[in-house]
Image 1 (cartoon, rainbow, N blue to C red):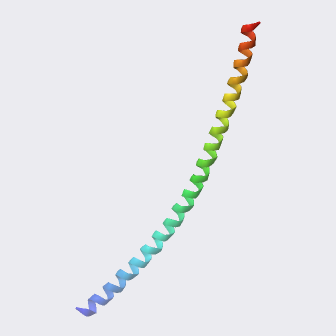
Image 2 (cartoon, rainbow, N blue to C red):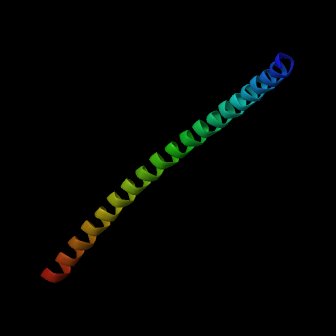
Length: 72
């Protein structure tokens, strides 16, 4: 029985080590993807804020022009 158990145990350990390496690689890839997506998200948020600011400025200009037209 020991003769059969030892090779099985060795094979299981090798399988676990291989799976561990695979999972570490997958974790590294996911961390890299997470970093890229976080950066992209921050960029999109800044662009949205910039767009809102430009829209507000445009709205203010149009309101001023409308006010001038109405008073003329």
